[in-house]
Image 1 (cartoon, one colour):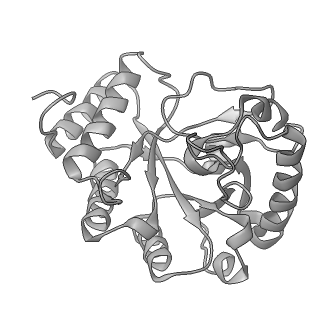
Image 2: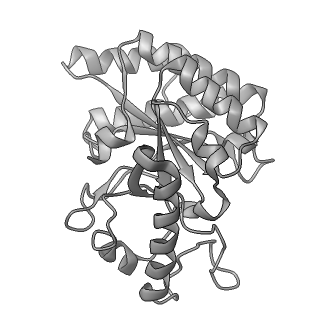
Length: 255
């Protein structure tokens, strides 16, 4: 049965990865986890998984909530990217949540970002990668154009990117496989749904329906993971690496 409808199996992921190899290409992935702040048991479990799997992790940290206990726990396989400034919703009533809505003056947003960036970079040191992953994956189009001048090299949101460089000097690499069911309990979406998103994005890339050069991005939220989510991630990492896929780091993707 196809990846568009019905049950998607691990065998279908294996077949899609084989299609990439048969075409002479290496399928590539990357991993972003959002909403990190103070150390928690779930965050500790996330970091153990990153270490044991050997998969590079881009940890999207909320600067207002971070401290040295967090950054001291990170090993060489973990990069720190900036998850907004304070993760406060500033959208108007009835609008989709956003820390950086269109109605907010760009100058105010940039001032908040600069202060938060300085704090996070001081805490993370060489682990810091100047990439903005805005909360709820949203920010105003005007703000995007100002990010390079604000010393950001990268931007990460959700869904296939429209362009690799949304502004001169800014690299965009998004995520495409969100394993949390936000509208249905905020738990794991299930292996079928997660595999379907993975296979669909890989196949769309291979066929040229979306940007082939954009690595397939896995989006996780450690605070929401149940046992099914942890088990799926462990299997996904082992399965894809055994199949010859490559997991890329944030510094490699964003330069």
